[in-house]
Image (cartoon, rainbow, N blue to C red; front, side):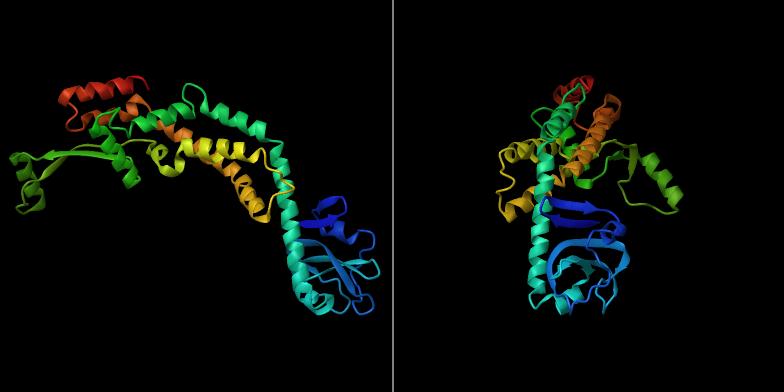
Length: 301
C-alpha cells in the first residue's frame, strides 16, 4: 500500500508503477547534487523495491517517497534517510508517520460518521423480532436468576458457564446388585458406594451465556452507547489520544457485529424446549412445584 500526502489530502495508490510514472519521479537521484528536502509519502510492499538514490539501489520492503531540492521525487529506505536526508531524519520521519496516522484515522472516523444511521438500523434489526437479541438476552438472564427460575436450574446453568461446557450428567448410587456387577467387570471388590450414570447429554448453545458473548454488552454498551458518545465528536479537533481511542473502537465494529451474530445463533440453539428439557431431571425440582415453574418457562420458548 502506498500513501502520499498532497495539498488535497491523502492519495492512495496500489502499484509501484503508479509511483514510478508520477511526474518528476526518478529512480536514480543524486543526493549529493540535489539534497533531499521533504517526505511526502510512505509505502509497504510484500515484494521488494529498489532505493531510488543513485549510489544505493538497495532492495527493501518499507520506505518513504521524498522530494529533492530540485523538485524531483524518489524513494528511499530508512537507512538512506539517516545518511542523506539530514541529521534530523528520525525526527522528520517520526513526525511524518504521526501526521499520516492522524490523517488516516480522521479519514476513517469521517467515513464512519456517515454510516452511523445504517449501523443503528442494523442494531435495531438484530435486537427486534420474536427471537432477536433482546428476547435471547432476557431469557438467558432468566436462566441465571434464582428469582425467576428454580435454584437447581440456575446453579446448573452456572456450572455450564464455569466449566465452559454444556455437558450434562446425572448419577445415582448403585444398588448392591449393580455394584456386584461392577466388581465382576473389574475383577476385584470395588469401594462403596459406586454410582450409575442415568443421564449423559449435552445442552447446546451454552456459549450464549458466556460473558464475552453478552448481547447487552455488545449491542448496547459497545455499540449503541458508543455511537451516542461519538456523534457529537469534532473529528478534526480531537486530541491524538482521543483519536486513537475512537479509531480503536471504529475498527472493532465489524468484529463486534460478528460476535453478536454468533451469540444470537448460540442463543437460538440454547433456548428451545427440547434442548433444555433434560434439566427437568435435576434433583430437587419436584419440591414445591419447582418442576412446574421450569416447565412453564420452557413452554414459552
